[in-house]
Image (cartoon, rainbow, N blue to C red; front, side, top):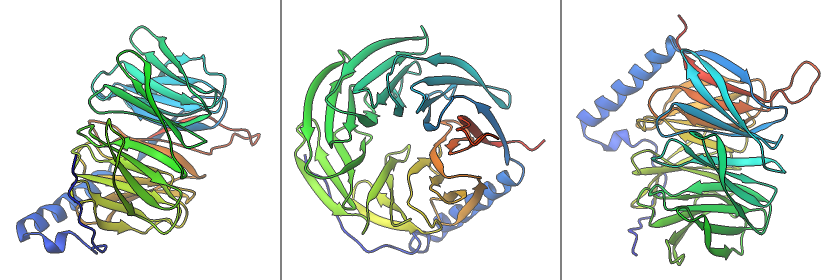
Amino acid sequence: MKIKVRLSSVVDTLVKRQPFQTRKMALTELEELKNHFKTHTRVREVTAHSAKVHTVDWNCDGRRLASGSFDKTVCLFTVDSDRLVKEQTFSGHNDSVDQLCWHETNPDLLSTASGDKTMRVWDARIKKNIATVNTKGENINITWSPDGNSIAVGNKEDLVTFIDARTFKIRMENQFKFEVNEIEWNKASNLFFLTSGQGCIHILDYPELTTVHVTQAHPANCICIEFDPTGRYFATGSADALVSLWDADEIACLRTFSRLDWPVRTLSFSHDGSMLASGSEDLLIDVSHVGTGERVIAIPVDTPTFTVAWHPRSHLLAYACDDKDDGNRDAGTVKLFGLSNE
């Protein structure tokens, strides 16, 4: 497996290098998005858990939202008109649920990673746990390959376990010699990406797991990575408070977003790839326009943001923060932004 690599300096704006019509279209799109959010800024929230919510994610058809929490449970919600309605609570993990992700094309299958040294798969249709895989450490991240065939789980000791998603048997394990943060496949499922504590992006051939390329993405800890729905771009977030946008084929940095002041811990592209939401300890979620780099909107929050996830078919953003109740206990809330103000 070969990957075309071209390292380049950060470009201030892609739009200036594009044909006039493309630049005009990008600016038009930006204006349309800004106008949309002039009338769609309402937030609804639901109390989901009894402790911090670490992770949220939509299934592929957008009919369900899942959340995972420090309270060891997983909640499923449906969207009824303009509110989230709790449909199901899954129990079974014996420690915090730190990350979860749905199957790319099957709207019923959900995978979860927990500190209890297991990975579980849940079926939302029959409302039960259908597989439990024991791993060697406290798991902190998980990703499901876009082709649906593999699940990767990373633990606190930088061991990544690769699981056959058809048999739920462990295929292989890879112990890395550097701090592994987030993990994700490219859209073709033939390259495996890792972000590291040294600020690097490591790209491995899959399933061989041979290193194809390593690039220094940030001068500080590279915390998170997210591919856009088309697979043309990916973004990384870092402890240097920067978000970088990358060409997925060239592995070239196209732009950086520098509006946040604190380490970037969560990213999400909108369903059409037009917007990128970034969350941190800043008391706002920054929503950037991918085509121009300009801000579309800043969503105000009262506490640091743990997780963000755009709806797969509309401009609705689910998120969870470090919210507290009146007694200064974890509120365990999940929020939905982008509802009509009417």
